[in-house]
Image: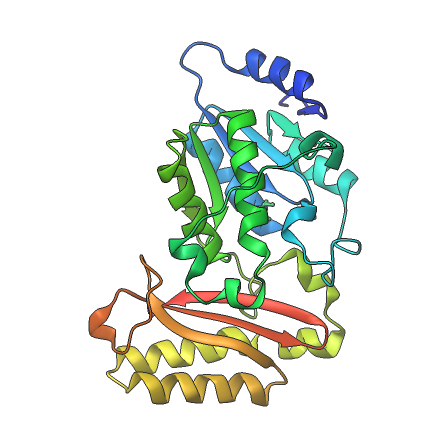
Length: 283
Ligand code: PAF
């Protein structure tokens, strides 16, 4: 039986806990989360354990990445369950600051990135989002100073943005993406899936099915514009309002017009009822 994780809630407590972890030759991995942990997060933790001797998981629902109209207040918070799951995985340290610790009165600094953060995908619909993510992830990186950090590929643009930021600011952390975990019917795991009504939940896998169908057509040499339009129509027919369904270069996120310009990634954001889902696959 491994020891239960240390829980740090203040910066001095975090420093003490990290000093305890950083024995000679220890490598430290960070898995940043907003809690409401599901099997997707656990797969990040397991990858982290394979790659580092000590694993830190942060749980912080970051107000800076939510617009006033978004779900910061209602975002699922499942602290007890989260701790039990991380304890069962043998995680070493949980970093759980409160908002005042992360953004004390007078806080006035933001990390603003361009490049992948202005690719015209999530940034087009959630202009506040990446400024909030990079600021909090930049802070988490400087607080924990991990050797390696793990992010899900489900938030593909976020992964690219954070990778770029870590390189640009010489943060000395290797950002690593982990494949999306899916439910048996293909729906990408997300803490926000709990918002779906039973009917919406039944329709939701159509997003993945439409992406797969589109990717298959593209691989078979189908016209990109027509395949994307038909994929969008499949999503709409299943009850989604599609914010975007786009084919982009998997490294740069630049728009592509044919598979020859690849590797190609298909990225979607679509709303069903009040819930907005995002997903992506390689084509
Ligand atoms: O992907 C998330 O859960 C969040 O955006 C992150 C990376 C933990 C930053 O708050």
